[in-house]
Length: 311
Length: 276
Image 1 (cartoon, each protein chain N blue to C red):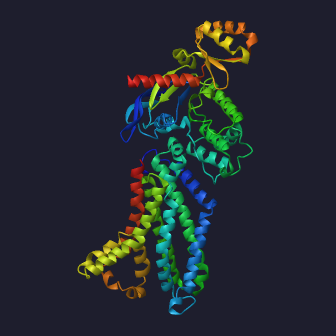
Image 2: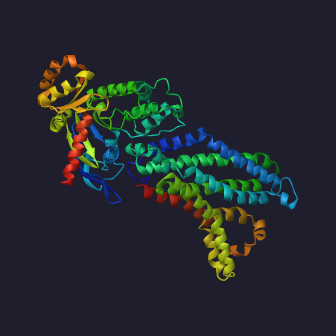
Image 3: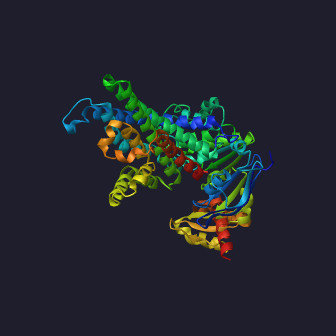
């Protein structure tokens, strides 16, 4: 099959005339992990559904493994995909193991692998219990196990860590790492940017149906060139002196409601601000220099795209 | 459909088996079988109470009473069984997952229909069948045959309404609308249709009605069911007053069973086309 695993070209989807996905083009190379970020309603789930052929694109074309979605090899292509929809409610009356075996039959995957998969997602103790008794996190893990059936070469995971506790999230990314090492291509969506930023090769940011930016996290951060944020807690009697020193060095400190002073620090002036702080050691109770988060970067790109549209 | 080169029956069976097991496990089959069996026995023993008789009557009379009851009950149960087959899964988000799998949409729908049909068949045959055990003591072979025809046609009636329910389920945007449509279908076919037909007959004072009225009955599977079971029994024709209408041979078994088969196949076919 083709070298490019996922290829979207000018994909448009409209609901009643209103575009919800508007001209999205995207490529994903084998073995790549792509994060799809965006606020709720940005069109991420719709994009997933079009990639899977559940929804038909109104314009543009989509190829998976170089094949069109509803072509003669559709079954073969679908067998190579693992999909976890957002907020899926599986069958209450079946046990975890029965659920997985059902999907294994539909995917023509080996039913003998089901118990192993349930162990892999940490459901070995609950596999014979009815899904009705599962917690939200357990259901999500069962859904993930389902997506792993048949050793998929492409995983499409829509908000996969929804409802998982921190420990389970950690375990989830552990499994994802193993899959990646096994050569799987992964696209996962999340609105929790902090969570995905260290775990994806590339990030695509969606806002109101459009892909507003894509690239490595480093590249997106560099383009945004956002300043770090300095926060200092001065001793009460030294508040004036601290403010003056910062202003003298060219920063613009502002009072925060919690009594701290805050100032933006561009990347080129990091060392300068540290020198100022060094001179104020006796006047400070505490300080912190916060890097721009991916959240900030994301908001920057979203706003930039909005400004571009308005212009 | 099934002539497509890559139609995969194993996938259809997997889906059917899951639906069927689901209804067994949530005791749907058991509950419906108990309802059917209990009603059959109640009617067999007390159906004649209005005329001052308690106890077993003739099989023909019992089947006639059972038919009147089944016309209300069986469509309702079949509609309840099928109305959320697709739209329910859509609302739970699991339909997206199913559609992402290497399963054709038609395979999915046919599998669901067959699984639900198996559950309905099991409940109908066990429920009405179990009632036959105490009843059979007073029956001869011909009477048993009449009773079995009732059970078989009740199943066909159920399958027809299940087919309509699945159609509703593929068309409806959400579960609430599907519920509304299912209730409307039940009212339409079980209550309104006959009333309307009767109204038209009375209003036209019978002019030319005898030509088309029998055929109009074929447009309602509940009426087809009634005709097969009530008017099939010669002794009862006169007592229902419509006997004179039914002389033209339109009610040949082939026509009636053909109409029933069409009522099973057509809505499902429409659902398949709609669900593509």
